[in-house]
Image (cartoon, rainbow, N blue to C red; front, top):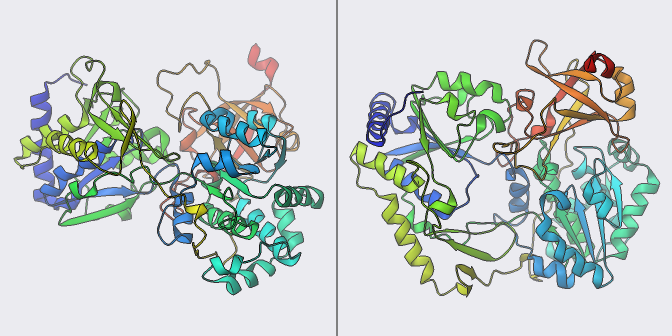
Length: 566
């Protein structure tokens, strides 16, 4: 890397951008925006590309795309809202379905305490023991990837036993179609697929009946499968049959539209625009017409994206690439130009919403950016000047701030904190939804790869981004069930090689932990381990989700604990 001035950087970026448009057209401009920043101003950056005639961007996200798409398909394109206040005041039971709240969602805990103080219960459905399962009043284990099937099987039981809430049909567009599909499920085969016995299933079923209204708090991991979208459709169906819409406090919680109050009229409509799935954009057949100049902002797909080993190869086919970030990330190290971006403490005024409550934050800078770092809006304003277009994201950000501060729907309740009267979708008794009409699919291992790889969120870092976090050094840990460890001929503390589905593909070394709370057929690793996403496949689930957990790996012993110590 060679140090350059801002003017030189903008000049080089501008020349590469103009050259790309001239040779390949405006769709050759590729903008990959990550969700490391949810600040409203990031929506304005594409205006620079729109002024130049158009651009290519990504659709979906590496985190919540599939689950959100499933709920929107049920709710006619809307993102359903379940306010946390409703949980605290009205829910009698909370089922943390794949949500490790104690580690990754601690701000939910006061509302769970409110439920318990009113005599309610908190339960968990998980693939393993976690801090949250220890916190819960009870927990049950489900096999990874079968969540949609289990939800549908619970729906079937409610219909067959006659325990479904009265009037559920009045809230569905297709009740007969759904009823026939659910009843046709073979209960025995479904339970086997879910890795569950009849007694455990009955325990879950009776708990749901006893604790209505139940808030099903879904996790991000349970939608990281090809069936992730259908999982949330089936959870919505289960909530409906349990009485959601009839009793406030029942429903499915899985984020909402954090950009609900953003003034979208400030975003310019481009003459042409192309969207590529976020997990597979680097596939050759997606990159026609060719990508000539790529920009990566608030994102590190070289580490966080599935099939990350293909990222560097894809960039070699793009003549010019730029990365905006706080650190020299793996993605930055692959790019031609790296630009230092200011953090939220160093820029503004700016705004952000939330994916779980109805408050907005107006943030202002509290310190100066270090060195020569600049806010993203100023960086893109420099690009606009370099290519000679009349677009100023800095001025547009000020206009956004002015409009939001004068918006009559917003009520400032403390300095910089605003709220708005967001309707609680699950409390609207006139709501009608469309239920799923097909059973979910369930992937099986590929050739020579017998163990499903599940990577999990942890409290230390988000989505595998671990810059500035103490990882303890040493090898990453891989957790195996007792049966799978025995099958692989490994014991606690052994060093193993984990290989992907391709015979000559990438691999990594890890240290074995035998976890008696795991079922058979899958291993668990923390996100962020170096090279872990070289083992995952780049695929897209409905909603352009990234189904990380549909990848299967082989585990081979390298040497035992004593050999390793020696």
